[in-house]
Amino acid sequence: MARKWISGAALAGSLAALATGIAVPTTASAHFVKAPCDFITAGGFVFKDDGAMANFGAHGGCKNDAFWGHVNYVDHETNWHISSTEITGYLYDPAFPNKRDICGWARTNDDITVRFRVTLTDNGEPGRNDEFGIAIDTQNQIPGDRFYIVTSRKLANGQGGGGNVQLHKGNNSNTATDAMRALKEWQMCGDLNSPM
Image (cartoon, rainbow, N blue to C red; front, side):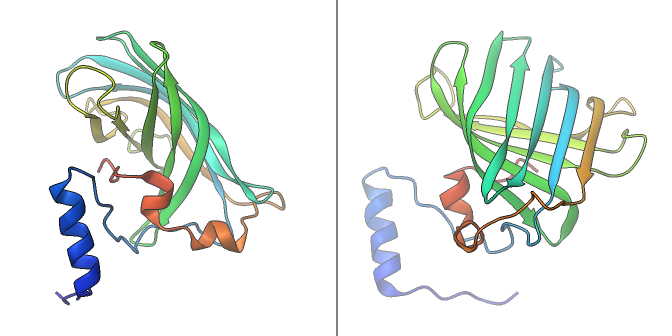
């Protein structure tokens, strides 16, 4: 494993931020906006770690030099619902060529703004090996844990839910600007890691 050295100023700034309780984003160069861009669509249900069911619908990508998409998620145990208001990132990791992450902001049915990161993996047809995961940063606006996470899980075979994920080849409208491709993962997704 190669070591990555950081400057003394970066280390001092990170330690100062930690001491004051500010979350410090980590550098992760594996996730970035793919060129040429594509798009992904998904829908289905998952069983959370406690066995309760949640439904989801998600699509995202790059379209006409902007991030595009929508995420809808309903936790039936808590009757908690998020619906995206802005997509801030669409990420690709070359180590997982069929997986995409969609990041953004959403409103809850309690009218609270939260940040989210959805992981979608298309593992072929008929979709039983496709995967879904979600991480939500409530930013301490909701009682309980700051982070709500459903780790990535298969959508069938009794392993976590049902549904389908489709990764689509890009078309002429799936364009991204150089500025979009230059964004760092933390700029698109904040403190949220991929819910693997």
